[in-house]
Length: 282
Image 1 (spheres, helix red, strand yellow):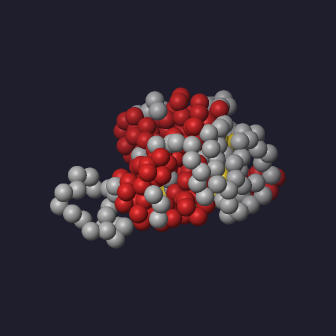
Image 2 (cartoon, helix red, strand yellow; image 1 turned 180 degrees about the horizontal axis):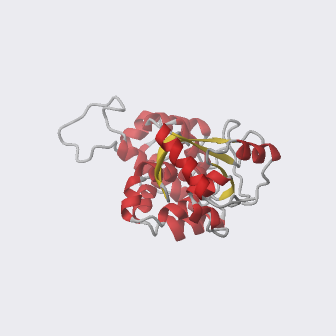
Image 3 (cartoon, one colour; image 1 turned 120 degrees about the vertical axis):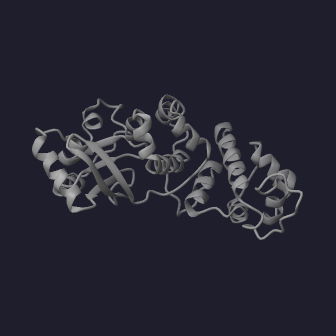
């Protein structure tokens, strides 16, 4: 495990320990506790490891750690499945059920996925990679996000696009942005050695106050369905969005948005009629 992974693992464990209360861990809550989270020695005891060894792990020291020990620590901290897998990847411990790293930024999009994105019209749809680069989109998506779809690579990135929203727009997208940063953090553990990921973190995430705050929280999660409102030329359209990995190429994700109400559907149809084509990414 190299220095960057050890440091990232230590910071992740500290943040998770701070969020885990004694009550959550089944420990008594004394009147003299200064912080709501667990102490290092409490995590060590729950995991069945020495307190000094666990302290060294949080400090990023070069020590050996096994899958069994990591599982015990994950249980002590009450980690979710995405958090547990994120910790395994940071520790460099491989397991058959963990998704691997895919550092490709030019993953080939299978024809069946291209056909799917076209066929779901008039619903907006796109294909993006683990770092949220938009690789393909249909006409409806391009109409809803003209600045994003018309940007040159590598600026055609969803996180970069969200980072450029004004304060009012960012506040409206708070839940979405936080969820995306959590998913990006989960993917990052498998791509920690990829220079393009570091550039995206430095150029976009840490320069945006909202994103930087979520990034430093060390929140890790899976992609989830969401409700997103998009400001367009014909008004605000609300979608229920779903994201899923493609079976033919796990490095690729498909995002589909479905208008929530008849009004949203009518606005989308009006937007498509008013938008000259073709504008979709090839």
